[in-house]
Image 1 (spheres, rainbow, N blue to C red):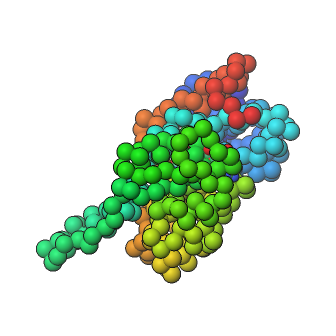
Image 2: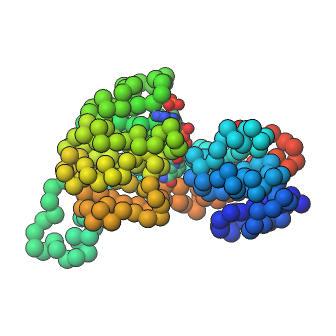
Image 3: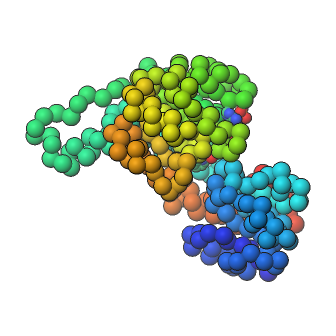
Length: 298
Ligand code: NAP
């Protein structure tokens, strides 16, 4: 039975099926041939060195920004992830954040629970129809977000490294997309190439009527610049599912009534997490049986 290393605790619906065909280890050693990590988990050089016979890293998530891909390629370590099965759930959460921020729904719910209604109506919010959503990273999730927001009457524009065969307006400068957008929605991968892509200049371009939505990775947004923009009122608000230093959320964001904060729940449904777990197991099984990987990254 191949030995699989789990550096962090993973749910039983993943470890159960893994245990059926593998030996699971909680400590690194030369016995280990496979490793399972959650999306975004940072695989350090020291960790790789402690696993001299590692053959495959199976990421329980679509984002593999924590895995040093070129180093893995050098060592001949295969990497897999869990694309597609989580796309719709994450797009739903992005849409929820657009609705929650535009209609001020979290505050409206707190207002009702606080029995404030008899003292007067809840303040007016903002409509979605006719507004523009600028999507940063029009991939699987970005496209699913676009479909949903079109149904809510928004126009779609996007930024990426190259234009795609879609009908939405393409911007090759992020500040220009931000200037055009009422909602700037981050859906690109994390990692060094996108670190702090959303900086003070982009937030200034988004402007005082603009809202930032981030369902991608916390690293893509300069959180210090975001806090400053919210405090100064240079953007209207933000809806966030991800943060730079998860699970810690900056106190300034928690204190702000201009933001909606979710605890990284983009793919957090029974259905999706089970489908992700199944892909993790299928990739490992395929590797150890010398069959083609289901969803290889490299
Ligand atoms: P995907 O299909 O690979 O899409 C990523 C998109 O980002 C591509 O269209 C790519 O377009 C664009 N992109 C890549 N590098 C870029 C850059 N430097 N600047 C701007 N755009 C760039 O991935 P996906 O399945 O949609 O997932 C996207 C990300 O969502 C994941 O990497 C993950 O971090 C995050 N995610 C979050 C949650 C959550 O729970 N909140 C759940 C799942 C995934 P071009 O190649 O044309 O630039």
